[in-house]
Length: 124
Image (cartoon, rainbow, N blue to C red; front, side, top):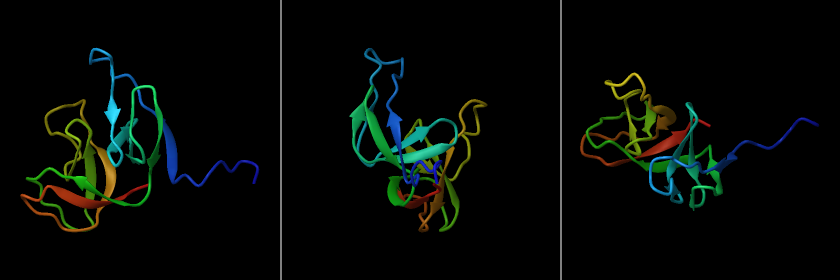
């Protein structure tokens, strides 16, 4: 097919300038969840800083930090809180019309109150 580009398991991601810190630098670590636009979450395959282009994995199962107070059942939809960099069971922060969490995928295990990480099947 002439219009096939690639399998889509990964995408290239240009780390932006956050415009807030003195140098505007954002640092992304390997294995870190990254929010892309309003509706995509990927996992950094390598680290980088503002201006670098890195690859993000869009498929697979990853252990990610979770909001410890949340109780999440296996198979539940989970969301990525890009401000606190944690997985949550809430679709938004329940207090802001601006902050909406990104649907990251599904819980591969049950994780109760006090548990700080969870295995997530990315929705990509």
